[in-house]
Length: 113
Length: 115
Image (cartoon, rainbow over all chains, first blue to last red; front, side):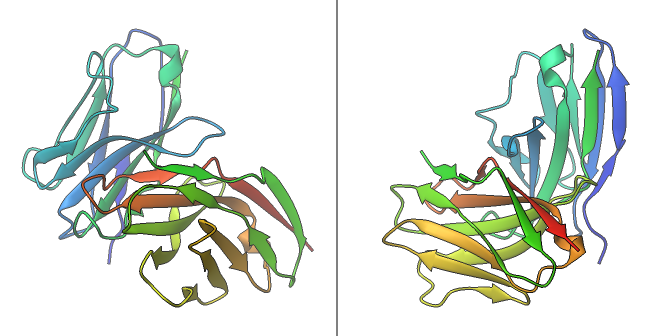
């Protein structure tokens, strides 16, 4: 069974530029999560989808971050415009259902210069 | 609000020995889940083991076991017979079951296995 796929693996941009990350969850997993992991810290949830609906986006900085999961499968996370403090690893995870075990992708390491 | 505390920033262990990673948590939920994940230098978070708050027995998965002490609100991970490939960051996480389904992670513990 294929795991969670993410791309790109690495991205370097300058501040005020925009960037997008893509995630393809494990087949059949209805719940999808985006986490931000700043160096030296544990991951922090940005947004949670159940199918194509948002369940929790309370910690998403909505002035610059947006995410969508239009067909209930793939998801994209966008940052526009990026700030220096957005430098982090962005992890996508999926679970079969909201209370299921979350399985993570390899992450995208973003560096904002 | 849920809070996870991992007080050991880094640990060294000799190959083939056992190591215990501490995790304490704070929650007002009666029903919750506790997880341990491993994060190698490659960055991917690998699920290791799960313990439900109502599970009476401690969870075990191969060389991993979870020492769950509900009254003390602790969920320590024990890795037996350490291998060089166990060198990684280990995160304890908790998920509530009453509307707050997100995982709350601790700060992590770095484990280095010495040959």
